[in-house]
Image (cartoon, rainbow, N blue to C red; front, side):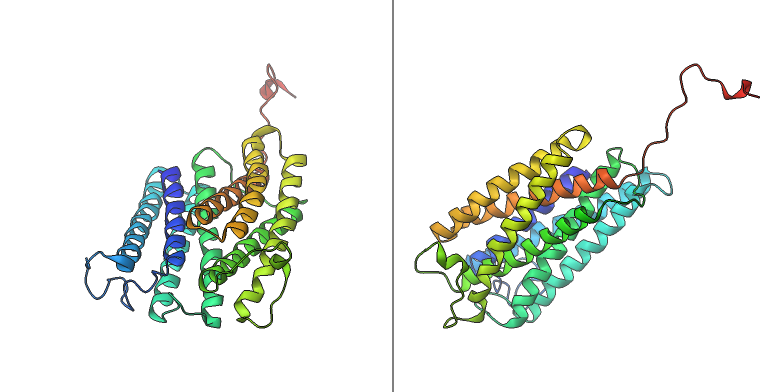
Length: 302
């Protein structure tokens, strides 16, 4: 159930990208959680896309709370998965509230206000917090041990924070590409500030720089420090995702960010984040207690 909930949450993320890319955020007007004041509106155009995303998000809400209930019913007091369940429920409630705020203030469709530029990365960072909480939950219900304090984790924290920055700047770039699509592509244009355009377009150059630096750091660390052992699969996901993301990023820019490539880019970004969170969980967990030496009986020691 934890895996299904995590997977469905990724579907919700992709659905949100479809709403943004198609300019369908105003499909239900300023009505939330209803759509145009009704439970089931006429499903046409932008309304169908926005309402569909809300339904998918509603299923995710039920899954997260159902998972939390199942964890508290099926685990003993003090089990680390309970913390994961609580964090997941808090994160999805905050996610819903941010979505409601965006609808009420109409930071959707063609709105290019500073408030929307702030709300988009905030929404994405909270989404990654939800995915992280669900990943920790999967880790714990799969037999992972509780976390304990330790040294040598600064790099893990810094790269994780860098990935949040990638997501935040990527959200701003995607918003700029939607509202102010480019007429053509030049390699230098990816990193050039164009003062004659809306301020949002000037932020496009930040994302590729942050993504390349942090992505290379994550892939390098995973290859050198986590390629073998219990983190091997997660490390390979991280390295592979960075390589694919780099190619998809350039392809998106060259082709004018078509919806299919945008969704693939976002999907691989989620895989990269989940892989990194899994590596962190493996590194943060308590060292298992050593088992007694075979044949040793402490009762006969004097």
